[in-house]
Amino acid sequence: MAKTRAEKMEETRIKLIAAGRKAFAEKGFASASMDELTAGAGLTRGALYHNFGDKRGLMAAVVDQIDTEMATAAQKAGQAAGGGWKGLMAEGAAYIKLALQPEVQRIVLLDGPAVLGDPSQWPSQNRCLQATIVTLGELAEKDAIKPVDIEAIARLLNGAALNSALWVAASDDPHMTFRKAVTAFECLASGVLKTPQTD
Amino acid sequence: MAKTRAEKMEETRIKLIAAGRKAFAEKGFASASMDELTAGAGLTRGALYHNFGDKRGLMAAVVDQIDTEMATAAQKAGQAAGGGWKGLMAEGAAYIKLALQPEVQRIVLLDGPAVLGDPSQWPSQNRCLQATIVTLGELAEKDAIKPVDIEAIARLLNGAALNSALWVAASDDPHMTFRKAVTAFECLASGVLKTPQTD
DNA sequence: TTTTTCATATACGCTTTGTATGTGAATGTA
DNA sequence: TACATTCACATACAAAGCGTATATGAAAAA
Image (cartoon, rainbow over all chains, first blue to last red; front, side, top):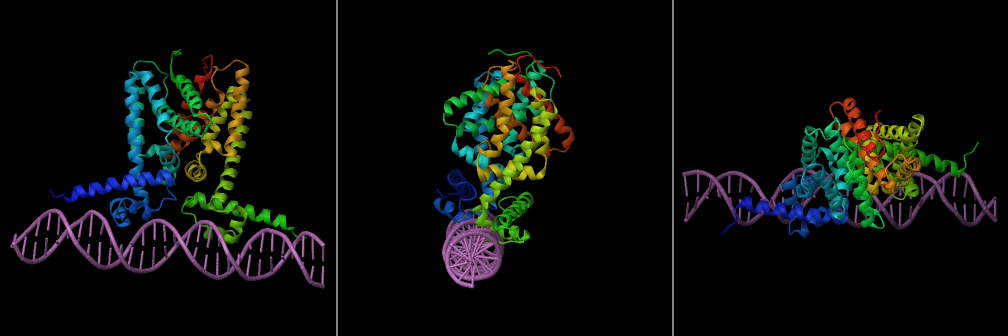
């Protein structure tokens, strides 16, 4: 069967994003050569500039892919924990764990902001933020949390989780540090609860 | 009087850091041209490479300068608030306010991590972190906070403060958003207190 | 005074990006 | 089926910027 043009184009987009993801993760955005990267995918820069406009355009696509994967995984963890407050804490822990991957660190946490600007303005991060806001909203309806601005809390919690991942990754004993980070995260988060949580 | 060689060299270092700070703030690290930057300071790239090794070296010097200024200002705010818990909260608010400057956003929050790596490993940030850790340690001795890892709390608080600044700066109503951010910061921070704080 | 050192300038090569143009296969039409 | 057109991708080109190797001239040393 002959492949339609749109199908082929979709294939090259996928190939380029995969190659970009690999190159950006291994060499960092600035040091990744578009020539090398596209050649590795059996293509040339022509395909890249046609599909993504420029180097930054490819970066945006790569970041969106990774970030979406993260948001999905975190939400899943939250649901597995039964939603509500426990779900929120599980989401936070999941985020920290995901951000331990070198790929995520290099692309999403370090290079992403420099290339694409404030992460909280990215479409993908916004999706994740919205999920957190919804959960916090439910808790607010149940009168379980203090009357503070929910969006602000959600943003600070997200930021704290992502930040702590860099710390964990750089530590000598990542396993131990991870536990410390999660505990601290839950400790801070408990500040929004009306009634002290013991477990 | 004739200037000694060391004095002159110190002058060029200062000139280059100032020019770099300006260029990095206005154009971003990647788009800042070393040729242009040094010419603006009445020098050439020769001086730059001799003094700082490479573009990254200059960036490190610039970041260190800004970051040190921030740490000093934040500590001052903390002391003015009388130290202790109130001082800690004042430090946090000061950090958020300082990070509202476009210069700080572009250089320290966005480009810095991409060029220099995890901020919590920078000498300057470490100084600030140490100060927070000391204050938290004093509170721990007074048995005022929960028995959690102090370094972890300090790191998360710092991260949350810096992150929220990006949000505030990008908002339509920075003044209002700033208040929300500070309130949320204090709300989360209160999670480490043993006894609920009312004011 | 001469010799040496060294902070800065000059000159060069290499890499990389973005664009402008070319090409051939898929799509539409008579 | 034959022809025209589109368009995804490749090729060719020009410009900019980084880092290094070399040159220079003024302090510092002898």
